[in-house]
Amino acid sequence: MPSQNLSTIIVTGGAGYIGSHTIIELLTKTNYNVISIDNFSNSTAKSYQRIKEITNKSFESLDFDLCNENQLVTQLSKIKNIIGIIHFAAYKSVPESVTNPLLYYINNLNSLNNLLKFAQEQKIENFIFSSSCSVYGNAENLPVTEETPLKKAESSYGHTKQIGEDIINFVCKANPNFNAVLLRYFNPVGAHPSGKIGEFPLNRPNNLVPIITQTAVGKNSLTVFGNDFDTRDGSCIRDYIHVSDIADAHVKALNYLIERKNKNNVSLFNLGTGNGVSVLEAIKSFEKVSGKKLNYTIGPRREGDVVAIYANNNLAKKELNWNPEFSLDDMMLSAWKWQLNLEAE
Image (cartoon, rainbow, N blue to C red; front, side, top):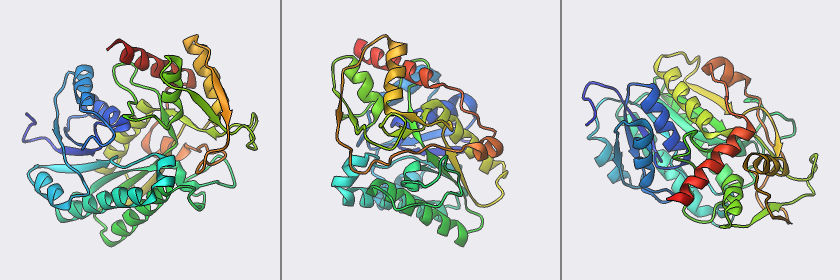
């Protein structure tokens, strides 16, 4: 049972990929009560068992849809001493958002609005928002900084993140006591170093690394979407960053707000390594660390994909005292270790 005396952190989407790794960081590096909310629309309750095995610590979990305001208010009003909210819960597939945009606008924005309304009513002052580098669109200059102008989003997923950031900015402007950090992820990959938890899409994955690892065990096929981009090898360039580095940044961002180190009540940080890696280079890294040769095909470009994006992460390093620790090979090796553990289950 959680302590009645400790402050509580709400983690939405806590059974998901980044949410579960962030709960691990919270349980091992802080002294907060942690309560996860997840309706398992793209995750599994097994994540909670895996977290407990890794940390040997307990936490509460709630199962409901954040888009249901009545349920949200009923469930969260029972919780004492909420000091902060880390909001991950959202649909995140770029291809799906292109074919079904309304699903993304309804889910991603209604859940955010309901959560912000509750936070305002309960005077919860610290809010961490899971944003995305997709808000930059096809940026003219690389690497992108937090000052880089936002282009038109290439997908409705990216657009929901742009709108979400705008909503939070206006809420903070209207409520000077409300503090938020917007974290723009680049491309989270890899798995916990233990290999006991990692990315676990319920349906066919859309992200590169789980497709790579599933292909390596014969459960999927790998298509490189386009080899005619204006890049060094023709494939898209991304800034791949280890999920545990992303999770660590959330704990640092939360404490940044709680300790009132923020200079403004809205802070914005890029979370990337600062290095652009092409899809073909990522494949080569996996082949090197796994010893497995991947059979892949070159396909047409995929709608919604930007050509190249990678971060300038100097601001996060300076303000949050955050430094990514894992190399590309580390990312690929941990993802492979996780896939092999899944095969052994």
